[in-house]
Length: 109
Image 1: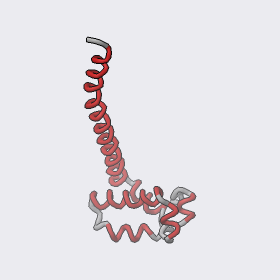
Image 2: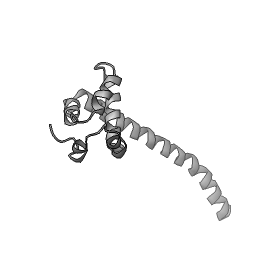
Image 3: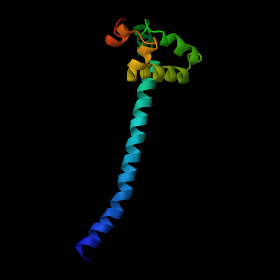
């Protein structure tokens, strides 16, 4: 066996492992994100999050889109509120996010 054969066989061995590692990393990150959303939904932090964004028009609109107080609807509402802070200029420009709420990070309980 020469060195090029060893490198080729090692490359064939590592490619599936790298693919599996990237796939599992994505799955783990998704599970962590969902776990954090569930934690926020079942804790008192959920109501505090909504109170902190009381000046924004988006929260009442998002609440209408999520039906009731089930865990599923709370997680959906958390995801929609997260979008406010991911794309703030989009929501501020449309008047859905209050600039004071954004600048204080929603910190006015």
